[in-house]
Image 1 (tube, protein in one colour):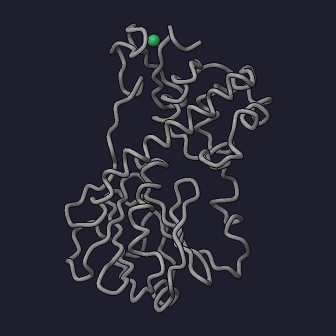
Image 2 (image 1 turned 45 degrees about the horizontal axis):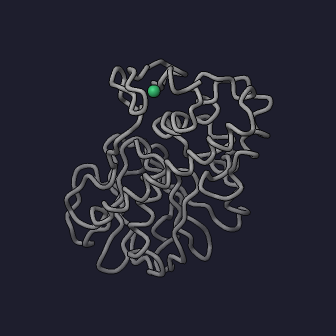
Image 3 (image 1 turned 120 degrees about the vertical axis):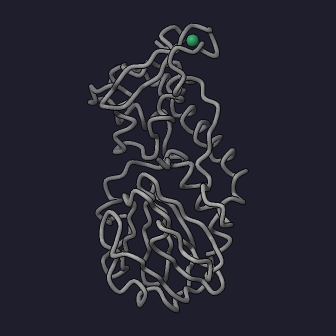
Length: 273
Ligand SMILES: [Zn+2]
């Protein structure tokens, strides 16, 4: 599943092809994905200029003068820039055409979403899917002090609190396990029992982990342009994630695996307290 770094790398890869371009057509090959595509999408976008691209959590944003298009990649979605005349394959559901090129959305499992927010409906941040989101982890207002303050009444395990997304967005399963390892915090620890000092380490670890993933993903940018498909969901080498039973990279004791809220958590019982 695409996580925040994949979405940000996607945005960075698409931006040079979309920023400032005028939409010349929209091709919808089915009525929708997780939800129906916005009615009138061709009329809404055709002839309009893409002022900028953006991202909020895992929503990719295309900003126009009169509103914004929100794109979510769901479980299996991909976005690529292709020649507009490239024939569509089976799971290619939507094209946003900009002259000779098209932004093409491919989504075999169809959990993705494309939504329109019109500026007449109010500020984009108040969109029903965005307004409950926590802060962006790479922005300065996300820091140890913020995590500490926000977690004083949260008795749930810190990993669950990170994944919940209402304090901070985009720290998915992989990045939560990796960041907690780097901060030496055991994932089961009640969020309200973690000290300010340890939260400062954790906030730093989260930023570092996400930034590294984005940097590594940047080397796959060329894959966003081309016909060869499988763009940009990059494999990295992890400290603990998906390494159950393998030696911890610090102490060489076996990495533990537990279940928390239906998700696997990986940690080192020696290094993380
Ligand atoms: Zn260890």
